[in-house]
Length: 323
Image 1 (cartoon, rainbow, N blue to C red):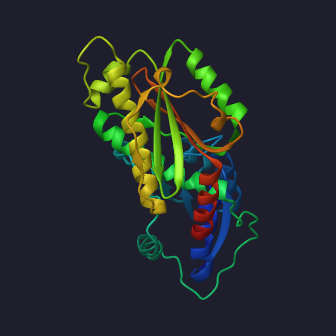
Image 2 (cartoon, helix red, strand yellow; image 1 turned 45 degrees about the vertical axis):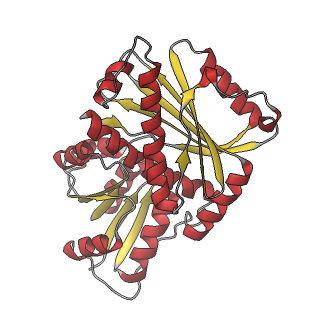
């Protein structure tokens, strides 16, 4: 018997990969949503049997969907498929009624076994409604890779802290040099924040990271991560925090695109780089922005990765091979 399956995820790459797998071999009717609000509407109107639900989405996230599902009067099988692999995230999902939890990138063998357990019938070809989002550009594709990297990084930081980290939505885009200069000027002029710069390189990709930390609990945050001060200057702790924020992301990114990265020692922004130098005046940058927040501590960590135009070409080529 055919199953109605909803893929509720803001990533077109996930829609595409799930469609390829399900449409090739299973008797299913597929529906799609890009946020939790759309997802709840599709569930209410289409007698959905199984929902593949992301946690980190715009408008309404997966946690809120789980909270609101009981009001619909019936509960489809909920399979969380998320980059947020914190242990606390899994625990909260199961407490809110999720049936299964799969981490991104999902293991096709595990998914195949799960579909078998859910009595989804295998056939030669399934019925699928028209889905216009199967073409994935390199920015959308990289956004999903960045999302997975952030999830891995959040899990590392959460394990060290013993505290839940609010998973950010990554913003992946291109930024002109003038916009970048304004961003850096804003960071430098904020008396409540401390900014750290760190360069990285790998596989022909050359980049710079800015980590902007603010909040009353920075030192406590650092202590929970295992970093301590040797003097009254908290910059030492800030540099250590920035280093783990950058390295945790790059390690996870390296695993996905098969490029090892090396990083230079991070340094306080005021001590580093003349951003009025001519090499920064005429380039466009490929950027990844996100903000980590601890749930109970007054700490906000805004991170900006930026790569030059030559790196952008390499990223484009990588995404074409993964698409």
